[in-house]
Image (tube, rainbow, N blue to C red; front, side, top):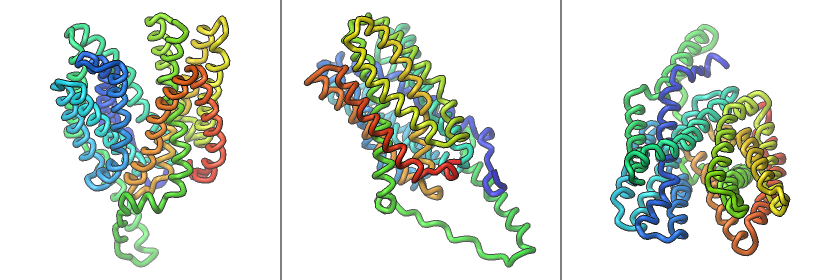
Length: 424
């Protein structure tokens, strides 16, 4: 760390991480309840699944404009408006008289999530030095994982007390209010670190004035804008964006494949919930280890083992599906997949932060996040399509092959665009 690049994340950790934890906890509370609410409004199972998927679709829709929004109004304002937009979507969902209106509310929540998450990532990109960036972003990813892990348990308890699934939407509304309150009550971390950086810059300039002539302040850097940024970085977005899509697809496929395969193996519902819950706990427990690996040894040492592990795990699900001990193998592979996913926690956000222009990262990050979320959205469609013509085990095998291709692309492109010396 140099004197021109101060880093004291501990002084702003609470306003950096707490809003993300609150926002994710609220969203985690409603995710498992959305299809239930849709069925209560008269939706079929297929339509209920579609409505539940609209959170991911909303994030995909919101990625590109959220980059423009964050660049124009700043990180904290973008997060405040995102919390307000999520509240609007929750009100629509609470008052929905039909599945169609519920779908609109869920879509709004997804769009708001895109802007909220990108705003905090843009802050990390601008202010966290590369030597600490992966740990800081892995911790940010851990806050979202913790929220998605805790939210369903909170929802289950509150619904049990209230006796209504609508209570889950109230949990999310309270969480959005709380996140907005924290953002308003605590100092803006961007302002705190920017002021500190400017103070050190002025001190360095004063010390150097005796050795060289004083020059005028540099002109402010022009913001490139969304489409100019995409055009300028089209090569890296095409290559590293493909990597992001493949990684995102493997991760989201795991969340769909495991429950479907468990059902196909005729496992009891309580056992399915227990296995997936334990797997989620393993995944969450490893989030900070990923950041340590990336910062100490380089991004490739986290990304490549993670993607290879996910690919091998998917292929193993196919190879063991017909065995007499298939349930035992399923449990072991579910845990293995969680380890593989956990050691790659934060990798997509870290890749984006490493690649983005530091002075104006939001437009680039919006385009880059779009590619990852496109993979998230596409994987369940691939699984559904392959399962319709074959079996869910074969769908797992297809995703495993895709993962091997992704590992090859990572090994090729990461050293070129994020070399070890650049990654820090």
